[in-house]
Length: 267
Image 1 (cartoon, helix red, strand yellow):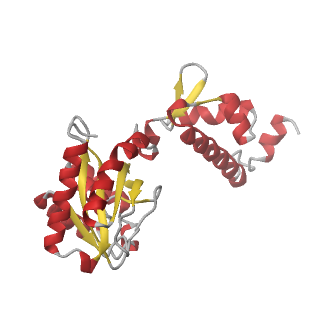
Image 2 (cartoon, rainbow, N blue to C red):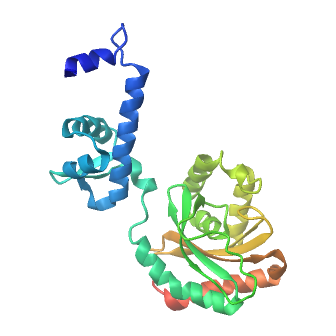
Image 3 (cartoon, rainbow, N blue to C red):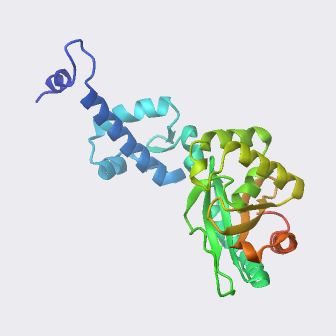
């Protein structure tokens, strides 16, 4: 079938593109976005995108044009394509793999001090993603999330500590973006999360229970980079019975001391 006949078959009598054709274009565009996002800052050539998506070169160029105009894809030099600014919230923080390595001694020290599991997260837009976990020595370990797990920023203690350290405008933007997801985490709500943020700011560290995982209580601290900007969070999680108020304060100090010892200049 010629290009003209294919176009005519995808249009209705009024010349508009049919729903089926529109859906096909959307699916193809999402295929391209998935590949570009997975490639990250290294980017991909058109030939790489053709191979990965099974699309023809001409089709790819037609899809890339609107994606570039809308800011979802950006040119890298003359021949490569990388995620655009509109995809920035979905990309891992620069150096986050290295951050996991640098935070490991901190997590290990906190786990050794209290015996419980510790976690490290980074921010990805309005979400948090676990980048490291250290299992403690206590017989009962509360492994609330695995490395790679993503959830709304603030429903866990490490994410709450990081969220609380952000400027108010960013806090509100994150809460608004996650408003529909929050009730799935132990009945969390935007109003409840705002109260937790305020309490965490007053304390200097976070504590949250029965939201990300029932029957669990966790304490968290924000982690800053060399410029003093909050970029990550760490937490220790255990059962409610093992974290009375006095021990919450103790574990917060342990985390802060471990950060100061191992990362005195920031992450």
